[in-house]
Amino acid sequence: MKAIVFSTLILALCSTSAFAADKVKVPATAKLLSKSEIVALYDGKLYSWAHPNTDNGNGTTTFVSTSSTISETYNVGGNKGNWEGKITWKDNQYCFQTRGKGGKKFDPKQCNLIYLDGKTAYEVNPKTKKVMSVNNPL
View: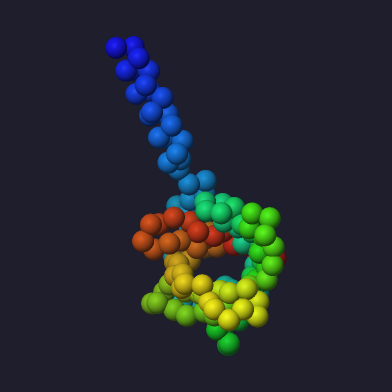
């Protein structure tokens, strides 16, 4: 009986650590932004970004609304480089596709909601509600 209880406890601990909560969540005080507010926030400005809940990558990005493009630097798992991309919209969701600078094929489109708390922007997957990126002005 003790072996069954101990095995169950070990299984529960392993399961808890395997499905640990996200490190970063959207603060309760954050405001969901509209398309026009997102454009006003990001347009022509350099931002740092970090992915604390996914690949622990980080870098910088510049969003240019007049050309619907983004340019980025990245460091993901020790792999560093430059990305370029295009921006589209799905209602108030900010959507983007990126590729290595000068590449021919874009990665699949990603669409996120943007929340703002102070000067920090949070990109959130609308389906999973997971924070995908934390962005701060430089």
